Image (cartoon, rainbow, N blue to C red; front, side):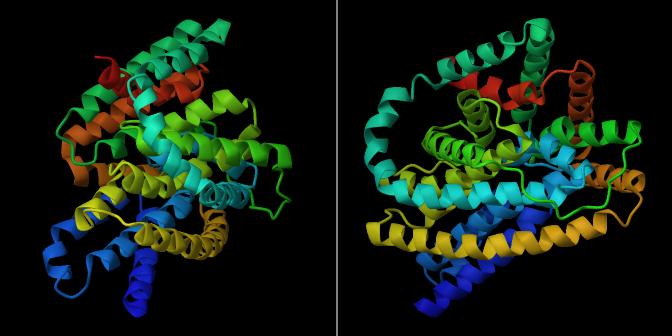
Length: 399
């Protein structure tokens, strides 16, 4: 059994490299394909081995998906809020450091979550009933606080949040196969790239500067990521980005470095704690764990220990891979004309959008990009653009 598990682990890492580095290719897509072909695969292997592949894929993805977000401006849902601070550091010559901050968050949160794993399992069964009906009102309170705290921009912030929410509702209720790709790429990717293009920005030589993350902000980021990752892992509709917004209102100003650490941590914590969810509540809260639950109807304690062991091994491999790949990206990105690179990336995102969802997807990309630019010219925080996901969730819970 050891050899099949090892092979599944390594293949999962390879698949995670593909999903992590190529915008639009998501863990859920690979998981769905695997389940679709499971009748064939189960003739040559077991459900447990296939589950190991999926978990290895998802953990690897959570460590590598910051690379296209920061270097190429093509974020997925989990990295959307990290695109802007990551881009700022890239333009300071600290793109590799930005990746390292997310890795510190991912690895630190994974280790802390492992230590707290028994507590997570025990507490889920009694916390879940207490807050499952309040999450919509909690989100309303958080967004109201975020909008009202800046007295000079309250109306603009509310308008951006509302418009983003409307675009999100329309997009998520369309028949697009990949609705989040054009939506988030436009709001947080293409709009940022267009601003850089209009300002004639250039990417400086990426330098090996010392990390600037203080121990205080590191502790805040990793602790908050574990806490809100715990909440996001077992509440339906509560995503990593919403968890990040909650966390930033709890920890306060932690700088770009701390924020990237927080984003990386939440992404990994969500996946790891989802393993606790399927065991304690028998509920799957993300695509990868849904796939696992369809393969293994009842997850046993021994299988949980195996999954956690795989997560630790894959995390170690993924950190080394991410550092290696980030250094390659850092060298490559300074050797090309930045304006041409921006146009190429925008063209690539547009092409993928057309391939996935045709003219309707392109319309979503265009609308989302325009709204992202409006937020920039209003000088409104990009976090208000997360209304595209938060407003639909609020309506889901409240109505």
